[in-house]
Length: 45
Image (cartoon, rainbow, N blue to C red):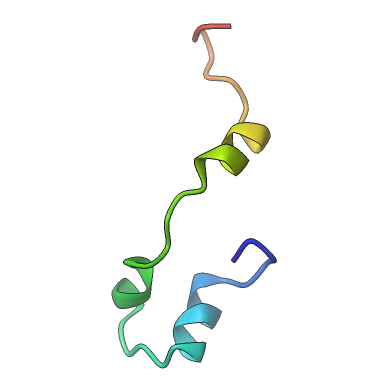
C-alpha cells in the first residue's frame, strides 16, 4: 500500500473474501502520516 496499491487490490492478491479480513493487516504508519498530515487547526505548534 505504501507504493500505491489499494486495500481492495491487496485483498484480491491475498484471496480474502471479505475486505474486513484484509483491513486487519492494514496498520497506520504514523511516521509517514506525520509528514503528510496538515497540523490540527488551533492545535499545538
